[in-house]
Image (cartoon, rainbow, N blue to C red; front, side, top):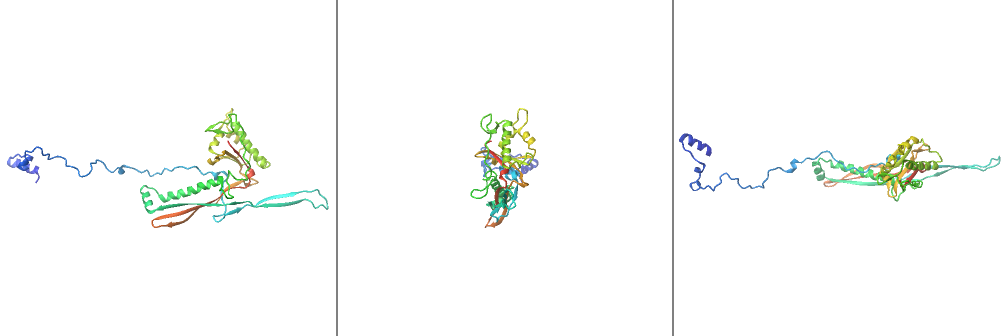
Length: 346
């Protein structure tokens, strides 16, 4: 029985009232230095909480770091040419030639002929590799991350990013050129001098050119195309104005009548489209290109690839995997460079 039960029985049956110390040996009954209810010393470290990770939460929505957009294919379009085994592509170019002579019944002068040329472009194959291990996948799964899927996304993004670069600048050392450095393009124009000084449309984020000055530079670009094509390109034809997002701010300039550059262009060139690419901000300065979308019923040019994304076999190691990804590019195929005019320095 407990002390409390014994004490209650003695009090009710025998009238004996006892104190707790009466149960102690006689040598300890009156030693008041004893602390019978004192907290004993802890064996473990003092703690009044729980593991902190139990109060933490991992948001299942993944926040992705955004990269610069790939916009080269938006300017002239994109198409597949050959396959990944194709190294060189030839283009047949026909030029009709001839000369006339004065007529005479027995004259045998004058001749018409055809001159055929075969310009070519070389493809460039490039690759990237993803690797992942068994333990790595399991640990990423604890954080609700599909690690293999994210690696696949990284590989596709890496290849596409380089593909976009080749569409703008081609590949050095090969007959592979881009929208901005094809050697067949005519020399770039220099913008007109502005009233505020210099030739730029935008300086340090501020539009420094007037609406009329920006529009005059655009007119110079179109006049160049008209001269190069002997008037085959009309103001009503589909046109593409390609420039960087920074230079595009110049199109927001408004004249004294409240009319903006974009309004002036749209009124006189109703079928013009504006395409932007950050790669038009080059070391040489801001580049602006004006393209005719088609010439003589054919596309002026296009960006081309021979392999967009090829997945090679997965290599199985002892407790890890590896896989190669491949893509290929022809750069930008410009069929009619005379249907493009460019300006550097805006």
